[in-house]
Length: 269
Image (cartoon, rainbow, N blue to C red; front, side, top):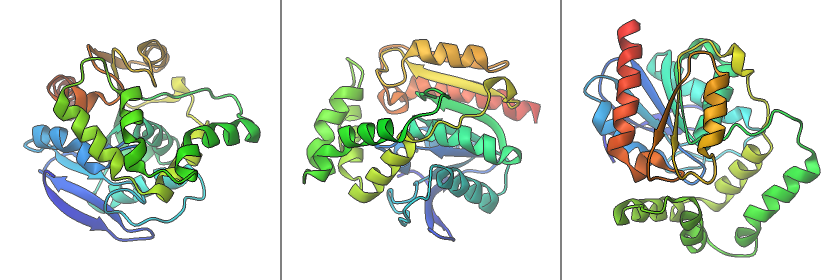
């Protein structure tokens, strides 16, 4: 872990890694992650920014309170921004990108910019309760039948990783998935799959960067291209050779494009 661990009080108490001084950058991990997933980014940016990497409720060292809906994750992020003093440049990967979008929709004044990494915005069309239940059952089935997160981690990582993932990156992803709390993961899975209330792309009026791995099977580049084209002024960066967790698979390339974007936004502030 890079930086200090800080607990943000409230219900639930939320754990964050904090490092550096300057404009606030809030990092939001994916559904199989935790705040340590952002160590490379915190280390690279904390000499110019105040970096805060958040454990979502029930992840890592954050307490777990079952979410009443997906909005609770965005409200948690807003509470963290208020604690450290915002607004924040919000960097979210996968589920974290969806949280970032909902944070913008619900708490616009707390968001200075958005970086949406390997984020599938899905469809704004209504999803039936039956379709949601089927999707949750499909992904939750091994856990509900008694498997542990550690036991399903190899299959999950094989599905999301790029074809040339370095061994250390694969090991980090395996550790991350193996450390999941079963109940927190199942709750997040249900909330994420059931969420479709995205802000209108044309109404996003903060600077936006879209990052995607060229081999991302979950949030593929063609989807990222459409999303970036629909958001006014959005920047698109495609990282070659990597899959769904691009910040871990290719941290140097990820850091370069993120640093370029954030440095430009900081200069404009």
